[in-house]
Image 1 (tube, rainbow, N blue to C red):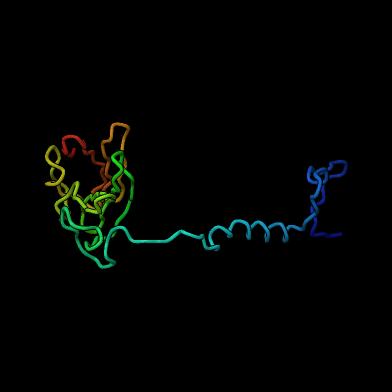
Image 2 (cartoon, rainbow, N blue to C red; image 1 turned 45 degrees about the vertical axis):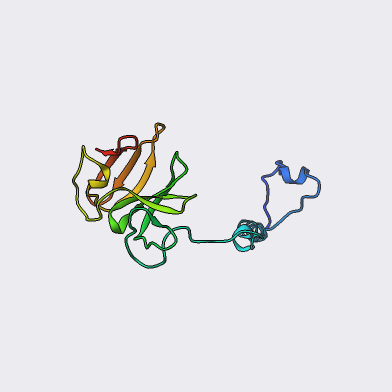
Length: 166
């Protein structure tokens, strides 16, 4: 005899039968109600919450150092990370640079990269280095940055105090 209801082994009493207010459900009912509960936060509008653009214009481009985040184009941002100083950092994949947004002043600053693809500059200023498709940005406990570069298969280190890349 096939049934949709959970059938415990003989002599085993399911825990849910011991709980007041619990009813038996079919597997289908369980999965439908579980899916509805999981989707509710995604589909229900939240009062007072808005999506807003904090950097970029929606067009492909390259932000100038010190430019306004509201009027500067960016180029394929990846690996967004809040830094230890409270700034928003990301790998600007398309422009081969690492950018920082001052969330208070709403200004974008170049942290590393000259904007042309390549691999050069180790031991020198990070702003004078060439990066090759930077993809991720992370920080260590001392506030130094690590940059994963996809196309040259390296992870580079930027000392945030001296701004030297290695």
